[in-house]
Image (cartoon, rainbow, N blue to C red; front, side, top):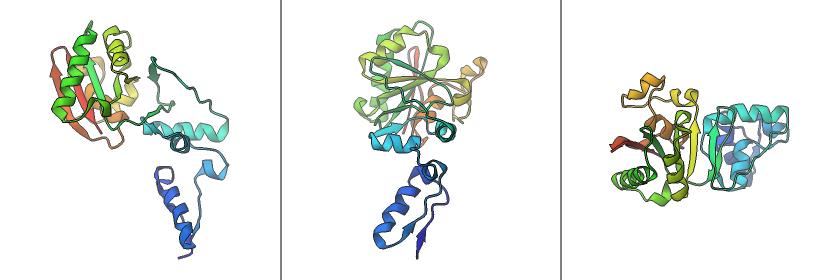
Length: 213
């Protein structure tokens, strides 16, 4: 064996695997466009700063833009609310789980915080391992949701309709009347690493919670 040539998943571990094989005298052949052009991909930026790309479906579009020009990196200090469109990669400090949240109009911060805690308890996970909250952009003006995320020291990310509807949630949702396939479940899976629900849509009063890993 003389060469290690990643065929798929170059930015998702294959390039790193090929480079490690160099220790055995095997020549790595890296052909992903960003590396060939001497530019850092989104995944490399995340790795170098010990961050996680929470919306991995965005990286193809962003890496394509990196090939054409310098893409700015915006560093946001908390507390802040992030609105992410398909062409924006969101990098955050590592979080094992993503909590998708749906809520009724005017839901209070106490209701959201209680639902998050009960959801984590039901899923058998620690709140400290779930610091990414996701919901629809249609909930952008819900003050209770924003305040709850701030008090729980979580990253709150609002997703556009396209990102949400790219998912295939297992549960039916009344959000269909808003043109969405759901809220809590698709928001959770859209930003999770594996896209696997460990807690399907569960209603706690006026709040709906789903958790994905």
